Length: 482
Image (cartoon, helix red, strand yellow):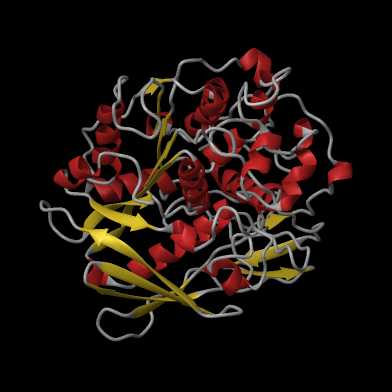
């Protein structure tokens, strides 16, 4: 059995899961958009139907097309801000999607309860328990975690970002002159965009690839020498960070409620759709990484959390709105004014339109958020995740990211994948590669393991400045999920 086969079997739990029954930069600020009060609904694929009906869909197969131009249907879920319906997962599903990798949105068969309005939410000073579902059910199986994963995804979209997808997309791709063109139809308007692909000089196609927001901020030449292609994703064309109504995301969906981070995630998923159906691109869509730094680090984490087809996520210096926990940022920023201190929720919201308007109501009530970003980070589990911090910039919320990362590591450990999450803090130029703490070695180790399928690569790398203060931030325990 190849390493990829063994790894896929480990991640998806194909041996155990079919036996289970599913139960029950300076870093930039953020913006928010709201989704309406949710009525219970079921999502399959990217379509939401309110009430008791379920929508059909899922990931489409490869469609017909001429050489270099084929078709794939997308399967992004998300709360619908227009209709006010929630979607996705729940505490007592009739049957859960048992896969955590290889599909865009796990948990298509899970049902999410109605998401409470702001006035119904209770304050919680601790980092919320990722292993207790919305109806109070404790997560004790991997199949239940899939549904909890879907709940967390829907809460992120409902309370923080706005929906990733309102209208289901049909995607075609074509490649010419080192550019992959992605055509998206089925929405309010048909849209298209392109990405540049730079192939390595070593290795054999189809190649693994790193998708970099604005090219990323890693040592791309070294990665190409290792046999990894580089895909330059110009995400601001999908949605400018300062204009929710600008870009092709809003044109396709016919709304301007969602923030830039989730719009960038939608665009990245459409890139993957196109890669899946365009073999002429010479890219292996099962060996993809995503990276970005500062505001793009926030985007990279959101993309990695919201698309489980991505094998490796590397958020660099993402700060608040990225890896950092809102609650910890709020505590660490107490008494700070002006430009001093760390970036907290209200500062993040005020800087750019990264989030939807809904998150604004939590600016002075952070503890009422029913989730925090240790859970967003945990959505990447059990896939590869390497968090890179920077000690030279207080604004980047080092301790806040360390605490969230430590709590997210408990999620990885529950899934038996503790070695798949890494963390390195050190001081260097913002978004530079003048690393001083072993970042390059860590990057290469994770790339070898998750993109080059080198089973001997050691990713047991955990070097945050601050250890998780469980007594202060965690009042829950992590189960062992079979």
